[in-house]
Image (cartoon, rainbow, N blue to C red; front, top):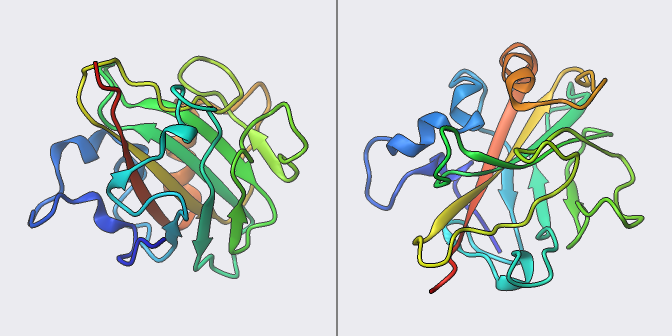
Length: 193
């Protein structure tokens, strides 16, 4: 399925300005000067539409399939970041921080971000908000309303150092200095009471 607009700009339908929740995401914090030229999409959900329960903690907890196109030739690695823009913490909940090489237009099959299988070739995990080098599936509180899960793809001109596990605070300055292009797709998930 498609996210036709580059990176969807994370805007609500009809909004002229980015929404306030956008400013806290790594996507915005990394800098507006990184061109939004990577098209990110998933066959599991349309941009801004619900993520199937299979890809949540209420289901199998698999990571959804992702596809990205438009990686610049000069890219050395891809940084994939998944954040919950509506988490109740001081900053968005980081569900995954992953570095992928080679830096090419690529597809991730369902479950590719699970560490305990053989699907992770070419992927190196940084630390999520739980302090784990793993994928954490969407798991918003019951009755807490819909949460926006933003799958962000950055093409970078060199591979980040991963000694001791890359963390959110370290990836931001790296992306500001080495980001060549970016794009994202947003899925919605809600646990009803």
